[in-house]
Amino acid sequence: MNHLYYPGCSLQTTHKGYDISCRAVFKALGSEMKELEDWNCCGATIYMSIKEITSLAIASRNLALAEKMHSDIIAPCSSCYTILSKANKYMIENKELMEKVNGCLAEDGLSYNGSVRIRHPLDVLVNDIGVEIIRLYAMCELEGLKIANYYGCQIVRPEKRFDDRENPTSMENLFESLGAENVYYACKLRCCGGMLMTTYEETALKLSEWLLMRAVENGADCIVTTCPLCQMNLESYQQKINKTFGTNYQMPIFFFTQILGVALGLSEKELGIDLNFYKCDKVEKLMNQSHRAKQITF
Amino acid sequence: MEIKDIKIPGKLSLKETELRLAFLDHVNIIPEGEKIKTCIQCGTCTGSCPLSYAMDITPRELIALFRAGDMETILRSRTIWICASCYACQSRCPAAIKITDIIYAIKRTAMDRRIYTKKFPVHSVRDAFIKNLYRYGRLYEPRLMFDHILRTGFWKGFKLLPLTYKLAKRGRIELKPTKIKNVSGLRKIMKKAQKLDLPKVYDKKPYIDGAVGYRAVG
Image (tube, rainbow over all chains, first blue to last red; front, side, top):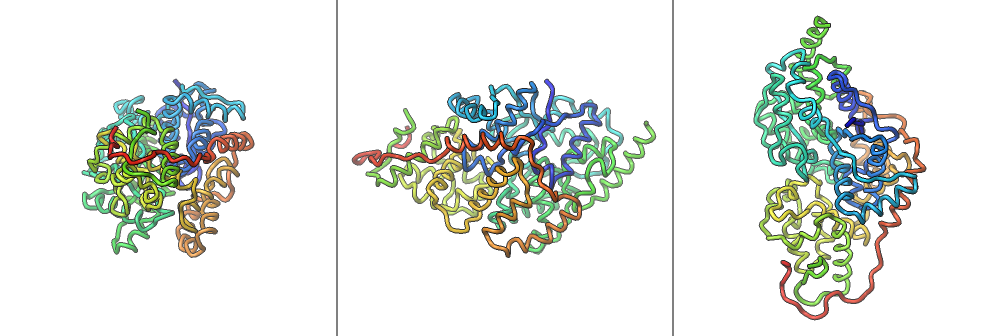
């Protein structure tokens, strides 16, 4: 089955780093991704929680487009991943609902039968391509880099998809095989506050502060995440957290594709690391090292 | 047993009955939504919820209140608006109740009946989001924030300026929104779907006549 790439809205603007690095990593591993043509917003958590059928119809338009191409969808954004999977599941389990949604899609000459699978890039990398193969492509060991793996909520929940719901280990396996050190990080599935940052800010800041505190306590050099919204909350609001709670965090937050790209010998520009707010010395050192190794090899 | 047969104690007021029916209609769409009646009140949801410290009614109490026949208190609670959709409760529930989805259903019931305060931030973000999606087919964050700030007050927007500057400096804010090619098609789909989503009108006949005992667990 071939895959179509569904970047999602936030990866086009505020989280370009994730988009760039995701494409670059797949290209470096020899499986370049094609983008789903004329995709639209999935509706996000916010629409799902207010209007059921409209949100399903919006999400299904993407599924119908992918089905036309006989492809699966790769969705790197956690929210898109959950919403598309959820819409898919709802429609497959409830035929009445599928009929209703198909009635809406027919307005634009589309229809959906429920054959598309939604995949996360982490799932594809670890389970399809495989950690062993990725190791072969690695230009350097991520030696001495202490990582706090933060999955966020929506990638492993609500249903069991590709990893455990209470203690996922995909990222740990991936980075451990690349030579990095995973620090103990018990709150890898704890909520960062999500959309509450725009509505109930104080509450969300407290949740994010907790995550940063735990990472610092366990001696992590950086937090590695899979979710754009988590990255936004932890990185962009870090200054505000420091101000509110009287702390002094300077924690760099990376996307998992960025750190993987460093091991694959990709440059700072190719991975969009220059777009992040906080710099990590160790990552920069490794980047130079692996980039040099790549130039020697080729 | 049908979900609408769930019995509740005492006689219900007209309003309560209506709210209850509206809520159950939303629950019916959820796959396995009827499992709400199998709640054993263990409190795993409340214990798992990272936000329960900020709630007035905890998720467990939400279901207890529903059984007791107090939809109005639920609809007026802060809980349903502060849920961050992290699904911790849902994935841990030993009775496999779709708690997050049920909170969504309560949210929808409250929205259909306009039970929220003026300048309510959640509602304002929602409105801005729908407008945004209708206009471009994709989310354009600056416009979303602009619409949101227009409704909730400029002071908030003023405080966001330093962050906006930092993002813009790194080229992480698009100056122009990207429109999808087939916006008109998407609009057609949305319009049709919105018709199916409209809140229904219920007849005013009381749902349960006379007093019944506490037999919520089917």
